[in-house]
Image (cartoon, rainbow, N blue to C red; front, side, top):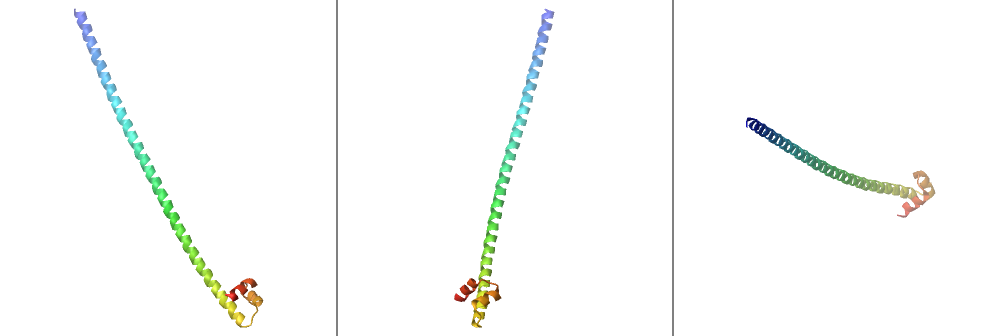
Length: 124
């Protein structure tokens, strides 16, 4: 009877140890699950940050492009104004020389222009 009692006690002790190991395994599994959730959250946060940075970069690029287009358009307007003013100066010079009796060929030579352009300027 004593032997049976001893074996029952040992079996009870082993069962208790097994329960303890199961509990420890459950704790480890819970910690692993918590760690996995934290990693998943960090990854999701990193993806959101990357998407936001990409969107900001696109907006900056679009803004820089728009600003460059505006600058180019303004430069084109300024260049057209300068070209118009230069043409007006050449026209005044050509007409003045013509009034002084210069031929279109002589005017073209003096102003370093083509004779066709001189004739065009005199006709305006």
